[in-house]
Picture 1: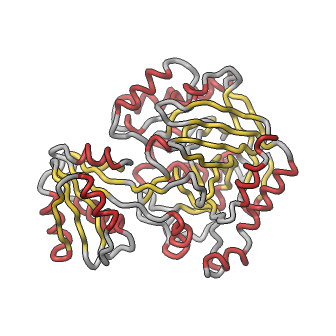
Picture 2: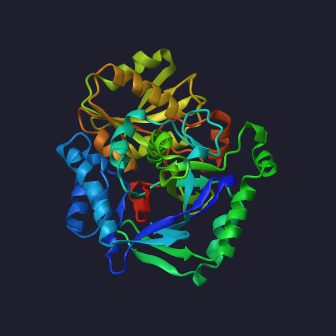
Length: 439
């Protein structure tokens, strides 16, 4: 392990499954995906069986609040120990260059560890590493239970850099053919292809770090954003896995007084991607309310008063197009309720983004006790299918331009929670690499 403290980077000892492991069974999608679709996770369980798999080391959030949750809190950590002790996991020191191809798009990444001392997930943070959205604190306890006492971490965290000239990953891609192959296989559930290369050459490593250091230079920062570097340089913005990194930070803050500063839990393994990568798309995250009492339209009128207008559309496609094409000065989003599709427009909004306006309304409605549950879902079809079931309500949002992300976080702080998603559910990061977080 080697540390580069000025940019909060550690070249980590990364654990990968030994040669001969069925990698299609080993790698499974992030635990916070398909949370309202238990049939997806049932298919994963059937595919994996008893084979070595990251599935046995995670708690899919579809099981939160079920008997399965309590059982997996024990079995996940037991599997971690088993895989280390029986040699299923092998150590590789150095960076790893990753490529993920899905739906005809390829995005590139770099595996390394980040210093949690340089990260603050609170709104208004000026730290080198920052959250991009508000943290839902009640989502942390189940993750903390999994990480507390765990011997390894399995990241689905993707952290973004703002590299418009593609100096960081582009330079690695040009020479990837000369790098040793780490893995190369098809992912399960029609989720594309995953391959990676080891970066063991110290000269190349130093060039990579130099490129990261350049992105963090005060003069580069000030020229790019028109903001003084004295306000705090933002180098790494968390794109996916905000709550997983917040969990790692929370655990580290609890451990630090007991273990000192030289401890593996001070760092978190992540994948670094370029926000400008052509293979990376920002998708909206929609909302679904389950087991609602009352009429969503009445709730909207009660909350927004004369500022809300409602237009019924003929079908879901008409609603989607109207939301995406809206140029109103107010904020526009879609409502799906008992097979009815509507476009909602709110004048004089208090938030900067439609998602903020919608979330404030939903939070207020949730407090009344007239909503059974809220879920955050990916994909037009999913929100329309779930929202159209009587007793539910779905809320459709358009996406935000990814080029706005860094400057918005710098100027306005973290975005409203669940503002955007980096791709749809099946495009999310799969668990592949691990790292020991105990001595």
